[in-house]
Amino acid sequence: MGETCFFISMPSAAKFDDEMIVNAKCVVDNKMLYEAWEEEYPYPTYPKIAVIGSKFTNLIYEGKKKRKIFLFQQTC
Image (tube, rainbow, N blue to C red; front, side, top):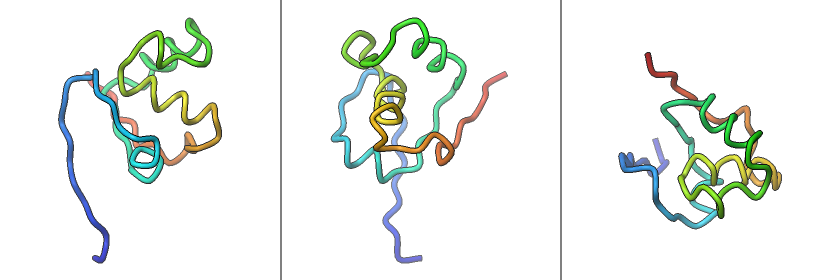
């Protein structure tokens, strides 16, 4: 395998270095929630709503992370 793998399950309020998030596969529980916040609170969203999903959307806006490599999982 050769890659380091770890799983983090946490509350939404957390702070990580950009580099860790940029190099990770990110999964959120509700993609549409973060997209709605992104529309309602334009960039930079993370300082206004300090949850990890808002950090993801900021990194996408900054061009540091590509939206297509996120693995979004919808909850029912």
